[in-house]
Figure 1 (spheres, rainbow, N blue to C red):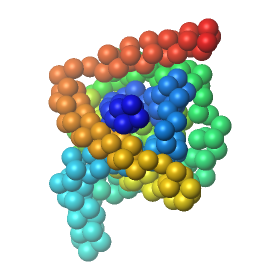
Figure 2 (figure 1 turned 90 degrees about the horizontal axis):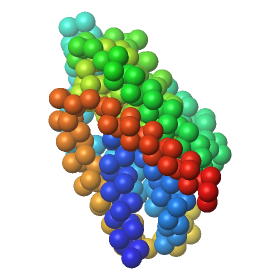
Figure 3 (figure 1 turned 120 degrees about the vertical axis):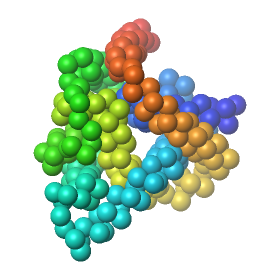
Length: 271
């Protein structure tokens, strides 16, 4: 039964990390409602986090390598006007800064004080409403190679808000991308590229925060199946979500967020 719960939690993480519905919010709800106590929660959430990082790196490896090499190349031939790859590499780096700063100074306080089902449900509803109207009125015709530094920083600042459980990193950055007139699929694509260093940094911090007792006290097999299911689910979620956005709107995810948030509030009220 423990392994089954581990796999289910990994699937939840793999789906909700990349769909605009909030992975941290779903994990808070999962732990609170189902009482997953087979392993240390921090250790478990850490390996699920690393599973989605592996999914990101595997799926975007050619692009990540391309932009990294372009960034290195720019030090000897700095011409961002004509070198689109180098320009985007620098814009991705600039867009990462707000989340790094907020994460370094405030992530622990947010993690310790705001991980409650009530706050998650409120944020699910609020961001769901914003997502609906952003999809309805915000999207444009831009591709990511048409982004300016200002556009990238706006999306980067939005990513910093994802530390609040229930917001959703992909959700808030896609909303910001739409506000900067990106196409839906391009907004998601930029969101995923932008999230890679932040997901890596967050995963590394979670691992470093673990104590020896938390690791030794956890069942390695349970952790492994959670990691594996998170990585596999995350990889295919990225693949098919990007295809989905080529011809579909984001409104279904807005509806889902609002409905789930209301359901959680009702359950909390009568629990």
